[in-house]
Length: 322
Image 1 (tube, one colour):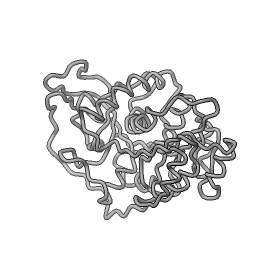
Image 2: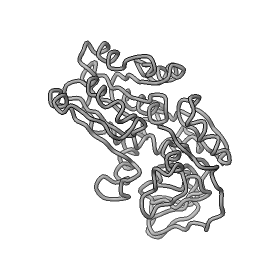
Image 3: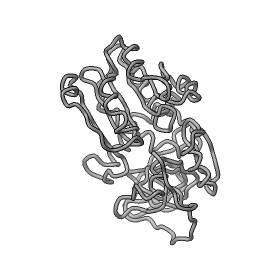
């Protein structure tokens, strides 16, 4: 997907945020670049109504103010947070339901790489069944921020993992626990996956490409397999043979994190609560870790966006630090 950006990021003075009831103000130490930032810059991904128009879907920092009715958090606590916007600012107002403590063994800056990736992967895999022996999961974009986290979380759940990625990032994916690294430029991932599973197919596919991969994803799925689409870098519209879905008894799911409501059914609050219970212990034990591909000053955000959108994009997350 190409991002047409008109001019550099504009930096401006804005009024200080204050903590609404149930919120805290976080003084931001670091944020991380997400493809949604590039898409928002290009005019293709507006923030939900009422949310900050400032770029940045996650951050880490220190609580400097508590709103009314806030319990369980204190001024001075080091946290990371899932945001609907505002991560590139100096301070952000954050509902306490979207806060996570900085995990033991992770630095304050590194923690900025966790919320968006962990929460996105968790929503994609939490309903997957426990794998049977030999079950394979396929992760597209395996070397990106989402992909590197998905490899580790799926491995922790007991799946064998295959990824598609550029050849220069195969070593990174394999080091994180992927069993198969497929060059999406030269290899047929359907053929590789079927060969690695004796023709059975992948039990689960986590897809960031969308339309361009839909038909081949269905071909690569095992009977009763689940295809979860979390991004559409390869387009939004495609035709699919419904009989192929029916024959394989495919579950097709699609989701986005940013548009979830703050509270209630399917909310960010629920995702954060589950992540803290199920994934934070894995991070603190070292079984799952943030993968940082580059660290740059926040003032170099334009260069960071250019790096993410280029063929030289590093594996893992690009951090922006103050």
